[in-house]
Image 1 (cartoon, rainbow, N blue to C red):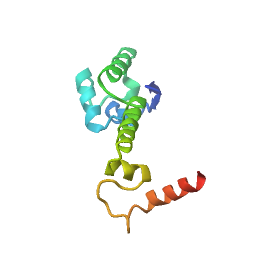
Image 2 (image 1 turned 30 degrees about the horizontal axis):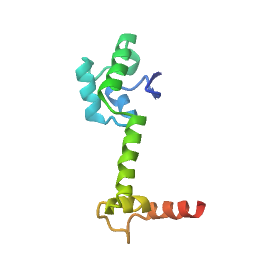
Image 3 (image 1 turned 180 degrees about the horizontal axis):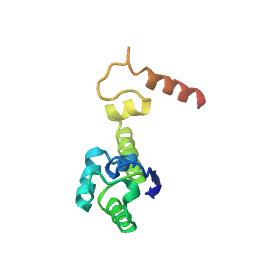
Length: 121
């Protein structure tokens, strides 16, 4: 098992599939990374050499915003919306859908989690 950016990657998976376990990398980005580094789409994680692992780690750190950096960026953007009191920021602070979805029949999970969150405070 290879650990890349503090995320364990399964040896039995293909590299392009295993990279999707890292927060901020989807299937198309994983395939793009593999093609940039010259990996085949069919190569498995267990077949990577130490040199390949180093190249992969270096490419992820330099070219992509992933894991904790991505999470902090998302939080900062949401906090900015809340601080300027935009409609979307208000909905985010209340934990409700902010893209126009109905809340009468849907979004029950979000409302249930918010009710639980309010009770704990």
